[in-house]
Image 1 (cartoon, rainbow, N blue to C red):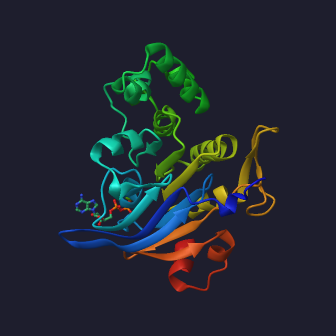
Image 2 (cartoon, rainbow, N blue to C red; image 1 turned 135 degrees about the vertical axis):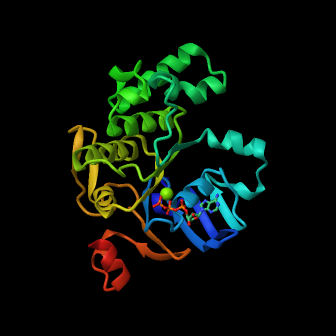
Length: 271
Ligand SMILES: Nc1ncnc2c1ncn2[C@@H]1O[C@H](COP(=O)(O)OP(=O)(O)OP(=O)(O)O)[C@@H](O)[C@H]1O
Ligand SMILES: [Mg+2]
């Protein structure tokens, strides 16, 4: 007996999540979900709360109210200790890359494993595997300052992958990169989705990245990115698009719905 992917419980569920600071509420009751093996896209202008949503999903911060469930676990019911264990299953690609400048690429990628006192042979194997995946194995002994912005972003992705997470959260992974380098990053994200079946949420202001995720897939036989036949036809889940605006999910749908929108705000976003 097989269970259809679309009947599986979502890997990430936000239910009426609110979060505010002294200046007022930033998230005013947001609800959305991400299916297993889906890479969903979180769009929104600067300051709408995309980074906060990712940090909430990773259990790095807690909401004022509402429920967040990740991989079947209610984050609100977890102690700080539980959350530390939970975060091993989450890869986080931070917006700024956030590499340690004084550590080599190897030390940056291995950092989390060393903190967890993983065996050095195992660390060497995992660091190599992660750097190979992002095609940065030659840079293993370099310092972040010796790398280009795109290379640093790839090392950040390697660092997020080193614990073999089942969920990866990408915070604006192509921001500030040229189109060719952005395409390389998107290809990596497609490979993770289509070869390894990771579930992901990607925050971005770049709609072309969102469309690339929805319209392309990584073909393991051809070993390259090909156009997806039709959304969902690759056997995996659809690519959900969520647009954050003024603390709420202003739009939720697929790439056809957002492209064909008559809504004036979304249309401006598409320009
Ligand atoms: N620790 C904090 N204290 C007070 N305000 C905060 C804090 N963290 C975030 N904010 C505010 O919450 C809002 C949303 O921030 P967030 O970083 O999530 O936006 P974003 O959508 O990721 O923006 P960008 O596209 O520029 O990355 C901003 O107005 C920010 O100033
Ligand atoms: Mg942000």
